[in-house]
Length: 95
Image (tube, rainbow, N blue to C red; front, side, top):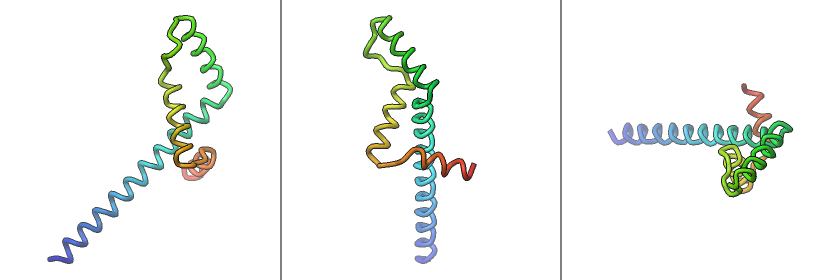
């Protein structure tokens, strides 16, 4: 009975570890997509328009969700030393 309990716990640990790795990979891919969009010409144009609107409405400190996601992606990349271009290339190979 002890072996079956240990095996059950080991299987549960492995499944939780795989789920954690999967979720981390999905987070990396999501942040990479936000980062690459914001670095594109259209993303930069949207950023400039957003900035103009913020200053025109006298709310210079408020940021859109896209800007907040971009800043979170930059922080995530800096903390973990991840190359978003490599993440997207790897993701495109399997997609």
